[in-house]
Length: 328
Image (cartoon, rainbow, N blue to C red; front, side):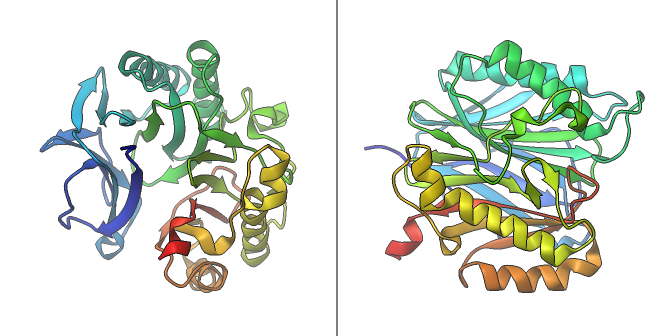
């Protein structure tokens, strides 16, 4: 029987079932990941109020094996691998990011999970400047791109990903990989592929696809108010929301998927496990109202007030489009 992988959000600290690959704690503190009771746990400082803290659980049918590799922790069954790492706070991230990603790519080769299909990166002071005067996000992207070029160029392409701010110190990251070769990395006809951005966005382009399709699930990367490669509607959160949601709707829709040889289509009502990142506290009521209107009434949504990868972006959205809801 082919195992599936699924995520869910639960109240922080709540008990969870067996077959857990990992627990990511979206709370008040950040730190290096650890193995606790056989489960990798990564803590991320993403909430300034304990009442907003939650855990993201990734689960898949066992048996599950966990361990560590250099500064990474991981868990896997026969089909899926979870891995998490942490890059200590620094005034320059390029080399440390290259090494951490290089270790991650070495791990997927060692354990024979060649296809990474989803990654997340949580970057402190993301819009600030490093010791060279380079934006921290661009500093991070430079190291990540070098690692992709050196250690993952012959793999299955760049996966869906999110790069977002955190209130903690140090970069936390995690990713999912699988043994099968079927995932399809998806681009969006409304947007320039991130890895083809012009040099005005930094010495190396961001290394991710707009989405990745695995079986019946489409993992949507962090998506914002960008058309082509330009930010649009600077300063207007409602218009930025409209563009971001429009980008997702197009990404997962029939026209965009069929143009890339993928059969089927999704609607915004199929999106679940949604994270909405917003920059300004005053925007939360409007953002919540917009999300409740855009998505299925039963969609699981979490709201996180953090900085976003461009200083002119006010909101970013990610999630998983799935056909499972239609059968409920």
